[in-house]
Image 1: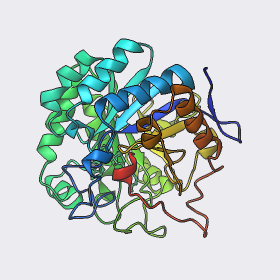
Image 2 (image 1 turned 180 degrees about the vertical axis):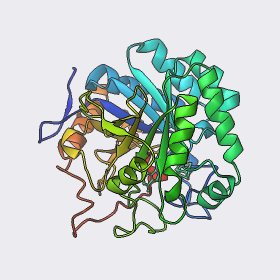
Image 3 (image 1 turned 30 degrees about the horizontal axis):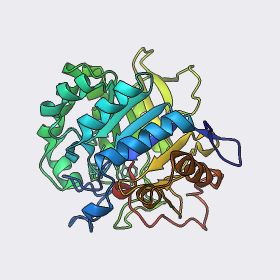
Length: 331
Ligand code: SAM
Ligand code: SF4
């Protein structure tokens, strides 16, 4: 039977974020500790067939019409292309995209496009090699740049760039990043740093806010609010120098968009999260492995979403960050 992922505030989740691995080849300071984390043991990770099963169920029975693959670093998952190909074949109208650091994308982009991937979001926080090495704790700027350009050449469109600014590391680079994106025809979105790093380095009083980013960009560019309705998209958009190019700012902390959230999340180990900041999770993997029917699995997923909180409340004094860091949830 077909149902919707509705919560008690009337929001309907249609956008599924699937983490395919908690592992990564970078160690971005706002996400992972320098030494990495205790990776999820392999037997606990959903197999490719289990991922395909749950994605099909989400589309067939729960009204999901957008799927984003993320991680950790999803390009490290050997089955990525096969999972995308399976979805594209069975559900050609479902929009699929990938969030990646683009390392190695020059080798895989053509196969991903062939499999049915249409769009991509690449994380790039700096165009300066030393800053990249400091922020991501790996000297891989050139690999990321090569991957981004290869994605565009392979036909992925749009290529969106996600940037997190950290105080005293890359916050002065906002205009350079926008110039880079404008020059190559990529769509840049700044994301406010969230308290989701494993080291607990996020600080509310020093974080770079949406207002800070806007002020900094306005010193060098003419920004006017884009008129298209925002809908459930988290980014507030501005036309740059009259357009058509735009820049987006996702103010999860200072300008939350929880009232319009349409997301549900599946972690690499098969846990449903109804919010990035949820304290609890619902185990779909064990239910799947115990042989529950698709109707029963769909019920479990729907129940998990019904309990979604009204808002993440990062700015509330009572806010508690979730036990899993961003890399293990899937951003
Ligand atoms: N490894 C891939 C990447 O970096 O694009 C996918 C996973 S990463 C967790 C997904 C997105 O989350 C990236 O755009 C990254 O910048 C963002 N992210 C990670 N930690 C964050 C934090 N503490 N605050 C805001 N965004 C964060
Ligand atoms: Fe890896 Fe992405 Fe986290 Fe950076 S943000 S450490 S690339 S998962």
